[in-house]
Image (cartoon, rainbow, N blue to C red; front, side, top):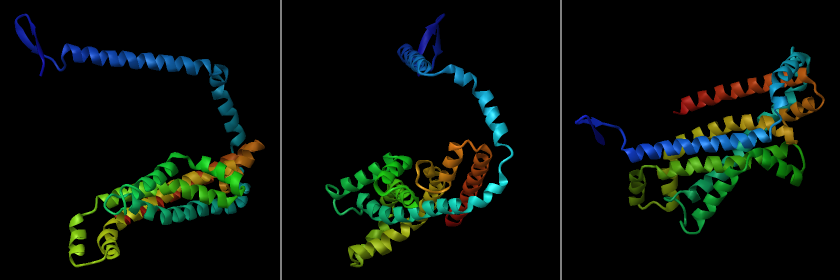
Length: 271
């Protein structure tokens, strides 16, 4: 602990003079960067619209209330499509994520030199691009519709599921694996009886968690033409049908709350 002399008495201090100067210089640099960034943002912002935002928000609120409740009859199929997009996309992603995870884990990959880097590349590339961007690309390739949304959700989910799963594989108890290997079991038998039982709880939790996330993401894919309730939201926004927009937002909120409740119950049962 550093100290300095004051009136002949040693006074303890938390940091040395050089450490304090370095700390203050860091704060000064941070403030300077913040001021510079704020100036850049201010120069590119039309502040009239920002200051007028409360009035605009109040006007939209008046137009959007009360919701157009009779429009609910037309939202049954879109919300069903949204659930299908999330569910099918999650299932497809899990089928592809499992082998990818086993190839990425150090203790199960066939080759740490060739196979593992490819698996890690798949994980990183699918996680780094948002599902909306995947949907835009797929709509240009296979056309608009629910199928493009399913594939977009699936691709986006592969990296997420595979990353968490391969980390779970690398953290297994090797004693069980060694015990099964000592019996003369083959590589596949070791995997089935020594590794899979240990990662099943993690796999189930990852699957439910990702499905919960995909419910949220699939609600907005329709904004770019990938089907689901987002398509109805986009159509209502385009014609400024604010009572319909408010009802759609309520339905989306209700669907997300239900999926969160189901996800929490399932995870609680697993854990």
